[in-house]
Length: 548
Image (cartoon, rainbow, N blue to C red):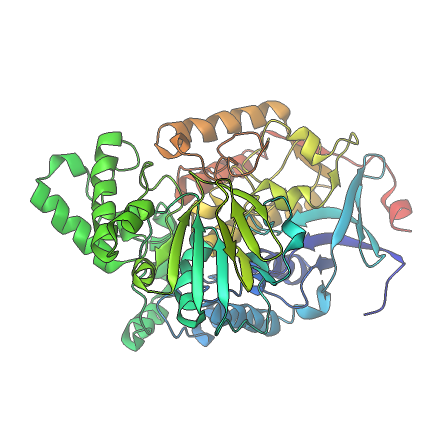
């Protein structure tokens, strides 16, 4: 690819070519008739499904729910092979969408944004890339996602390891053969829980380094039932309507009021049924009080811990794998044969909470007590700097020359999780303080894209040049988001929902927990009231002069 050194003008720039970027580009270009271009760091579309190619990578929301709804043609033309799609199939789907809508010509691949500056005089954004390209635009939209900036730890001696090093967040596209090799993996979060069983099948020996265990429950994947698929396609409208009305964007039909109002036998039977159904049935579809009442939560937690102990033969290993924090307050991973993997002779579990990693060595890891471990391969599966990390990586400077990182020094400040004061015409798809990761992401993305498109259409129709939230409204929105969160048990556990996994990151609950339907109502009400809570600005310079 040749290096660009020119400056160009366009109506809108979008960063990222995953679900969000693809739909945003299609909407800007094909529905609003605007000039738009996308910057994407990868060499193809896919977003998180491009980068996360580790063994076992798969979605934990059922396939027909985890897809676009905006095009009936695409819905009818695409068919899924499994109940829960694996990474290669999701990537193929996004490629199909990009080709079906002819989106690739407007995507700049292998291009990273290095700076983003707003000029208050021209009321335009200037975006610079690592390819020497400068683009000036009126509307700037982030589709970078919430989990796209890896939180790789800074162990002493990290660069000294002489073996093979991998990260689940950026896995080699050609795959990795671990046959006959000794492997160490750091982390037991969602990615590691999917990868560990498959790596263990290949490796000579796998050592898992765990700081915090997880309440993982069975995914219960299976080939897609053809009759079920036909029924969905025959009634997609109702299928999507039910999903949007559901708290998390996926209908779960077994919810009961209170785990404390039923007999132990009734509770056991219901939790067992949810366990067998798989996915998020137990977490989000069993009892309405387990995420609000600590006593109710303990009953569910004890059930999951009992299941773990039934599946892991060695009692000491089972104890290490049993969490002691509130159930469901971390995002629940779904697993396939994860706990049984620890029954294998070639798998070891090492606790690094009581005995942390001191340093990386030439040949492996050394713990604080002096225990040394040697490997051929070392894998980091240590999570993400969620929500804010990808946005800060855009190096945004707003209307007053203040960076987004500076403005958010005490945690995100947004209205609706979409815009931030001092950063006019900058939109965040599924940004912090929106439902984002606790809602069916494709449907949440569609709602955001369509709301943003309506804003842009309104501005163009009314000769407006800028929009940004009122500062006071940001305070109100943050208070609402944290108020809803504090009515639940979720903030009581340190998680990436609060930024607690990143040293020095300000603690703030970053997800709107009121559900997708209530959130959409909030957004729609703002629009109906003429974008109440936002500052709408007229031109301060001649537009023709700006474009020349």
